[in-house]
Image (cartoon, rainbow, N blue to C red; front, side, top):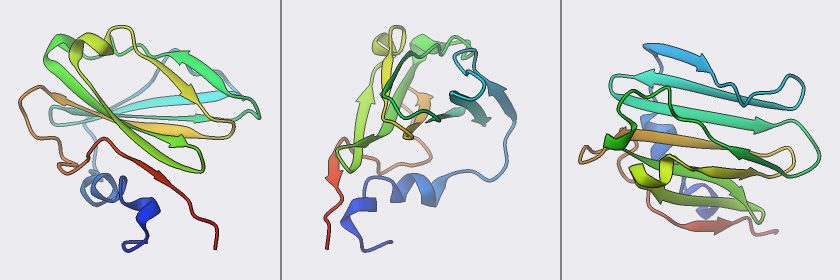
Length: 134
C-alpha cells in the first residue's frame, strides 16, 4: 500500500490519524440506512467521515456549525474520484456553504484544522489519483 500511487493522497492521513478522541458527534445530515456522517475531535483538529450506503450518487450540504470558531478553520477533503481519490483544500469561507457529492457506496474523510496551524496529516496535497487496472 505504501508504494501504490493510488494511496499516495491518503497515506499522510492514515499515518497521522489519531487513535483517541476528545469528542464524537453524529451529524444531522446522517440518514439511517442511507448515509452516515460522523465528526471526531482530537485537540483542536476535527475529522469528519461520511459513507454513502446507497447505489446512487448523494449530494449533501455539509454543516460544520459544530465547530465553534469555523471562520478560523481550513479543511482538507479526500473523496472517491473516478476509480481513485481526489484531495481538495478549502478555506473557512468555503466551509460555510460546503456541498459534497458522495459516490455510490463511496465516502469522504475531511480534516479540519485551525487556519495557520499545520494539520496532523501534514503532507496532504490537493491531487487526484486514479486506480490503474493491471
